[in-house]
Length: 450
Image (cartoon, rainbow, N blue to C red; front, side, top):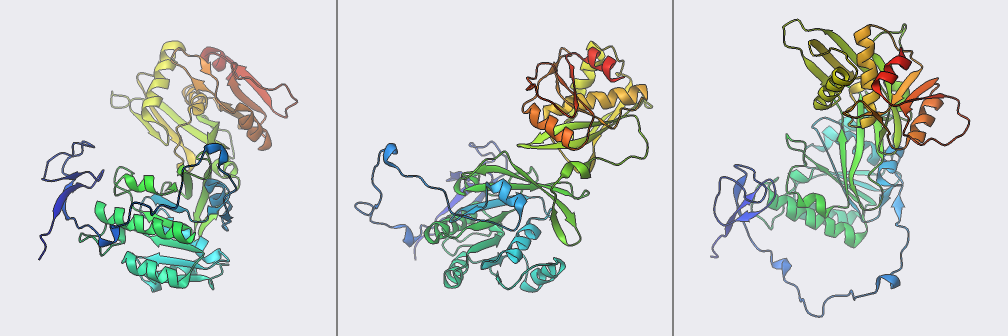
């Protein structure tokens, strides 16, 4: 009987060690080394010499062509992927539990007019059917379900069925017979992923993998998993709000600057064509502390409502609280207001909120945050027809933001009368249906606003 070989593998980065250590030397994480059985697969023996079909070519002689893509029923997903799913590509989608990953992929599987194999290692076929019944106006005759965790059985059945599209939910539940370790370990994820990628490339079948994430928000398993796949999508949002954002962290076939926006409703996920109209609250009267920011999510302009509340500190130590906005940047903006503009906010409680549960780090929000704070401090309402796009520097100057013409065009399209921007932004001289107010300093901005 052959001796069983074991190794200690870091569950965070996948580094192998011959003995147990408290800390992984590669990634610096503590208590992540787990002993796993390591066996070399007999399938990995190849005739190396003379077996390669590829040859060295000059880059000038390489012929290029457009990749064949499958258009999905979701226009938002097509936008994020760069026009559709490329044949033979492997896409990994990660997100918080319950955020809607399985719902999104099941909707696509049910609505596509192509043969789709939906593999689930987490739910039974009856559970998936119950969820499918909630999604109305869908076509189910082309969707096939398979509940299995053995990657060898899954690929065998997939070769028999010959689907046009494969969805696997999730990669952490699969297990290969080659490696004797539990599902979800680094070795299993790496082996199962490599087998699935090989199947996708050999047959030209696009595959979607659902990935779990850790408490830090990273996709669980080795980092090499994200390097192996062609596209990495992140599906995030606040479960207490209805909006979900789909972003591409990696895309070998398109841009990573696009986002897709969905709304969670009782019938599943609904695409949001114009998020600005939904994110801006329709108010019956003008209230102080509200300002509208023109932001960019990738290349997509969007208007967000910023709410601020400034009040006297009750407990002596002032509170700083922000939802959807970086708390450290809020402290910096308050310091700039106090130092450069003379507003004594050191003894005030400041609460900031971006409505709709949206989280963004666009520096162009700075000007709207300042406007909302000043409005709440002086208890003077800002006109609901005003919007803002500018970054604040440490010396109190208002810095330019990229793609300002797209932001102005979006504000004009939604019927705003005036937009405040930096004087350093270069704006093409053309007739606009919106007044562009140019400001350079916070003091100048305060005078013009009030």
